[in-house]
Length: 330
Image (cartoon, rainbow, N blue to C red; front, side, top):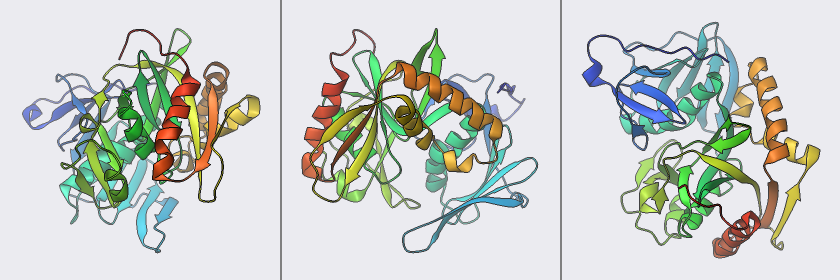
């Protein structure tokens, strides 16, 4: 998809901050903690606070409810874009091409809006801009990167925190964004924020007392710099690990997926894949990209009993599968 480059408007530029996320420039009048700032200039996505709520976007695309039946959000689509309505985070309009996001707060807290914008909403806009993304955490290790793929609640952020204590480097927490350079897939740096469940915070030895409550997830948002080292460089992707935690006692196993199994796993872990049902061109582009990716990057499935006590062993298995680290880089 061809990107539309937005030129800065005259006036009030001092009220806006420019950020860099996954190699793209974002201009916002809402603070986005965890995103790297950059110099003012041409931007790819603009974020604005809106006084008026967005118009009804039309047909419902997806509704998400909690385990207790409470509504988490509703996504609808109209002719000119999408509308995300979060009871605790306000309403977000996302243009059809992803170039513009408008937030109407209602009674929402600005910190919740910042967490949503820096996570799922901006991630969705990036995909509408043509960015390939997997639902996973991404870490760097001596010049290369690897990803932990899993749905929400499967423990990828907690395992990522354990790996940061093993001298890995943080690239991104929830979105693994990929681009290609001379036929090599690179993972792109994302937000510095890591979102952990309260019971996970006490299981990592690093200082996390400055965590921030994220009400729409009941998680705590932590600056990854308090857990380990942050990497600001894109790194070649060396491995992808599909997490399969089990509640029943099982032995730890790690197997290499090939062919159709590897491709199916990547498609299943498309970031916001369930929200892109109306974007057929994007779905075709993702399928082609994942076919290519599965041929050049090893994809592993790792099955284990879900237990905090086993996390160090699981982390060692991941690092062992990666083999000797590459030289140089982050």
